[in-house]
Every structure is written in structure tokens, then in C-alpha cells.
Image (tube, rainbow, N blue to C red; front, top):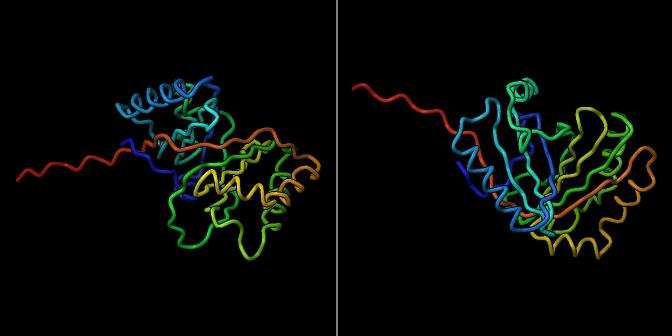
Amino acid sequence: MISPAFPRIARSDVPLIVIGTRYTNSPDHQRRLADAEAHEFDRGPWAGGLAAITWFLSMDGETLLTCAQWDSDAAYDAYLQGNGPATPLAGPPGYRLYRSLAEAGETRTPGCLITAAFDVDGPERQRYFTDAVIAAQPEEGGHPGAISAHFLLSIDGTRVLLYTEWTSVEAHQEAAEAGDHGKGHEIFSSTPGVRLTHGNRYHLHRTLSRPLPQQPRSTR
């Protein structure tokens, strides 16, 4: 079913997250491409092992981001080997959630997604960098507009993706202007083997979740 819900990234039942970005040139192309893909998947057949797929549109009108959540590596591999479409469910590499920052019982609805992607020199750098960024966070909490931060590590050991949910893009901008991100920037700019490659701001467009199993009809 198609709905406008943010994906739940911290799900232990869907450990594999495949995130891809594509250049779309214009806001109109963003929407048309996302809508066409969503309706194609909604018609089925549903890919085995796929729990949900979400489409995000960058606020600059140039990029389409897809986030596909899978039950297992085996399910994803079987999909690719079965000649599944290259997009939007494929897009190397696959990620696993390593650590998250979020208040217990958080119920606010995110208003935007902010991403930052890093190339790193191997699994040790992935964990070291992530742990250093988390350790540098203020104990009293950050900007009130920050809802959660999820650190995703690529399976091949080459990337870290910071996936953060905010109440609004204005809240994120306020935090940046107040210098709240300064310590994090200092860490990634001074950590050997870590290179910022890109980041962007997105708003949610569509989410498609696995269809519920059909209940057998009563024979009575």
C-alpha cells in the first residue's frame, strides 16, 4: 500500500538497507519518476523479502533517493539474480544500521531527511569515525528540531551514511547557523581515512510497504 510515512530505520527484522540516489534534473522529473516506480511496484508482483521502499525528493529538485529495506542479504541477492530491475531496488552498496541516536518514546513526525555520505578506508574506520561522532554529541541533547540520527555502515566497508530526521529544514538550518554541527565537521575533516562525498536535504514523497497476507475465506 502506498502511503506518506517515513521508514522505520531501526528495525531488527529488516537488517539490510539499500539506499540509492539518482540525478533527475528537475522537480517535475523527480515526481514523475518516483510516482511511476511506486505505482509499478504497487501493482506487483511484490519482491520476496522486501519489507518497504521509500522515495525521497531532494529539496534542490535534482536528486531522487530511494530507501529499500530487506529481510536478509539472501532475499536481496535472490531478487538481483532473478533479473529484478536495476532501480530503484538496486544501488550498491547495501547498508546495516550500526548505531542510532534517538530519545526513548520519540513520537514526533519527521519533516525532512538530511543525509551525509562518507567514503572510508575499511571497517575499522567506519566504526571509529561513527563512535567518535556519537561521543562528541552534547550530553544535554542537541537542537530541539533534531529527532533522530542513524549511522549506516556499508557491508563492503567503504562507506558511512549518516541518516538524520528533523522536524523541518528550518530547524536543521538553525542548528547549522548556531554551530551545532561544528564538532562533527571537525571530526570528519580531521580523521584519516574518512572523506565527505556528498549530502543533501530531502522531503518524503511516497512509501510502499509489503502487502499484508491474504486471509483465507471462511467456508461456512
